[in-house]
Image (cartoon, rainbow, N blue to C red; front, side):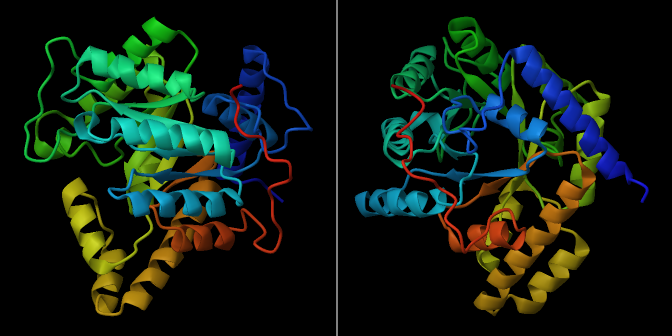
Length: 354
């Protein structure tokens, strides 16, 4: 049969990934099929691309209560059985959850056998606080940072500290200058525009693409996007990134719909484009919680299949909201795992840092 455009693009991406692995001096180990001994997410992604294997990852946030923290550890342990390539932990606005974020990162790495990417924001944060976060991650064996400008704490305006950073690009430059290649660095991408950037009329969409390219040139290894529901718009954006000289992997950020109210609040806050068919379907079932959750799973599977078929993205990143059932149902629905077989072989390695 003739190969489609998506298949040819996927083949090209795989060949490019294999070349990058060779250039980086990395090797593909048959004895480490789950890449548990590969500490940096950028290396994990390159290996999965070279193997032609689709991967997925999960995002969590620090709970507000001790019982919530205990429940999160239990949930992460259950979800780890599905072998996500990595998970990531958010950093509260202005460093408000810094200590808890660091504890969660360290404990998940040490006791649950997952490599964690720690978010690090620079809004309302001094350089000293940024250094504290990076040193804390390093001490805990975390070699992966998602470098963000971030949002200000609730009720406060965005401010640049006197010795702080103004943009995500500045944070990436600082990490590279201070730590070289020790950390794998991810950055954020906004397929529909940044809520406080082009969507607020502060800059053009083209200016945002220029800023993204600057983050990449400063040393970013991969991009994770803001949540979206318009797949066609997302794929056009990825194509525009490639045309702009951005060649690093791009991971789509997917937020499964859990309930009607949360969907409306989140899409309103992020100024998310909602396709007409999604909007109509949600309005029709908004009073049926079970139907909304089931549709959220169905929609995410449909979106994921279309994204993966394009050949433009090597994997999927799920915003879990610290919930597991919908995300795992999506992973199973995509047949990325066999739910009847435990994929985690014993003994699990404790972490990638001794």
